[in-house]
Image 1 (cartoon, rainbow, N blue to C red):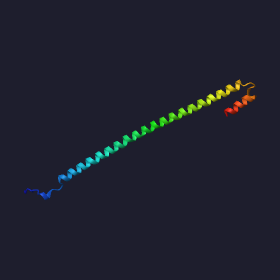
Image 2 (cartoon, rainbow, N blue to C red):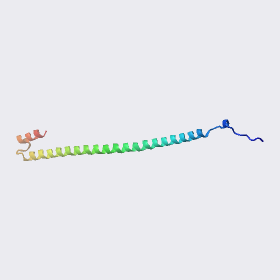
Image 3 (spheres, helix red, strand yellow):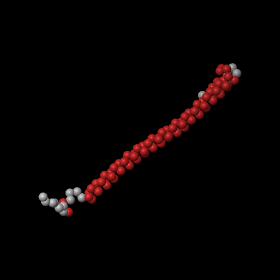
Image 4 (cartoon, rainbow, N blue to C red):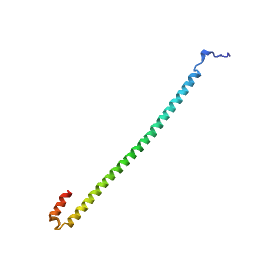
Length: 103
């Protein structure tokens, strides 16, 4: 039996190449993980921001509509009061003028 002695030219896979492959793999895995986590959390943040903006817009629009309904209701009650106070009911000139004013 002969013992074989390895020479410098007989190295099949140098340790530098192994180290470069391992470091490259670690970098790719960590870069992928950071990208996935970033897109997940940014997506959630965008969703929450959009929901908050929709809520504030809806609240503002509801307040405007409520004010308009209140104004219409007030005007209708004022017209009804004028018509009931006017002498002669709906046929009097004052009642007709009040109706025209509120149209």
